[in-house]
Length: 251
Length: 279
Image (cartoon, rainbow over all chains, first blue to last red; front, top):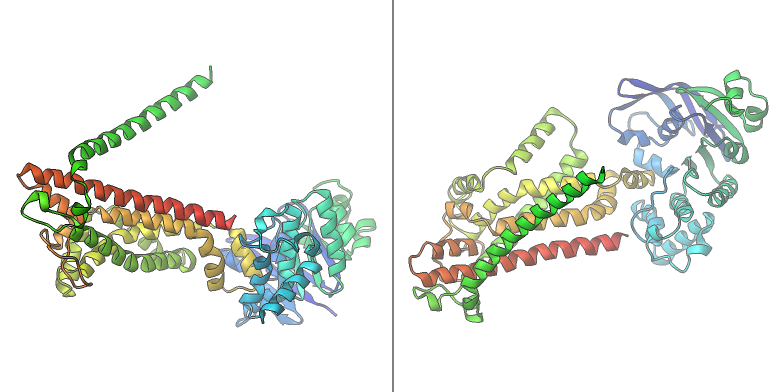
């Protein structure tokens, strides 16, 4: 069974081709890591999976991305509904300048999932618990989300994404701006979340990819060089280029 | 040694600032010396009179406030709406860029030109006559470009990460603008709007052009009522030969200045308040 399948995907910023013929199949309920040096296209590819690049002017996609066997770039696809199914956490935590509670409640409200007051509060608590943040913020739910620490903000963004019950969670270097302890908490969280979600994580930290992921895709210059089980990529890669990268010979 | 030019520049900047402040202070002091003695409750609540000592500004003060409120009611929704369209929805087409350049130019058009437009369009063609509505419509046209420009500036300053965060949750474009972008941009929009309106409240030329009466002995009682405003009253008094009317003019200037400063203070207060709410 395949959750996300890209077929000969090409992506252009204006005239520049940023992704070349990417074909990859992501399994459900596992963690898939995209690794590669800066500018290799891993983040761009991640953002094609929820059509986040649509809001960047001058970009163009060729090829197909299938989620549950339906092409998300087919004409008539509801992008708004797609993004509710495919949640995203960004490199730099971006809580809304509102209270902690409102940050989590926002997605529920705009998707008409808020229900009654107590239902809404229940969903907010559930999401904060899932993101392992509830204990730290339960007494200050109505304080500004910008007042908590960077690591907490990033977990709040994860809680916010989980609140609308996505099927897939895309994470774009979610721990790159965090200290080691906050990073460890995020990684533990990813491990817990994969029971319920299909997770795709972009990281330039190879140790992190090795720790959290089941499958790893190595990108280089806009191409997918190798995609396999994580242990295989890190111990016995098929491509010389992959080996050179994971052993730190370049990058 | 390298710090010397730095210090020199600081000194020059400070001197220029002091010069500007001194000029303003001298102006206010001069007007204060001339007019302060005339300021009284009777002056504020009085109506025009041929005798300078019993003339007041109630009709002009209420006229100014009324006209500015109607101007705001007309210009703010249109201006903010236009800015949202241009910034968020408008494509980078040739037409859009032409419109942009035009708006920037409109902000620099002399106000009397707007007066002529108001006279032709609102007073005559649309048959509004010399009413509050015609005056406010003219002033609304005058401040519209400034409101559009400052609103766009404020919208543009909203970080992309906030928009992306909203879109990533399955928000529509409008939900993103309404719930996330506008609240963050609001302090900037408010400041720009109030500053634009305080420019409008001091305008004389366009209102004279459309024929706002210079002698009105009553408070405007509706959108179709004739009216006058403080700057026109001041202009009227200054052009009288009797020195007592010059004193009245100085006192009216003080009232107008107070009104302006209050509006600007409100702009600062509102901006701080909303910024605090955001953080």
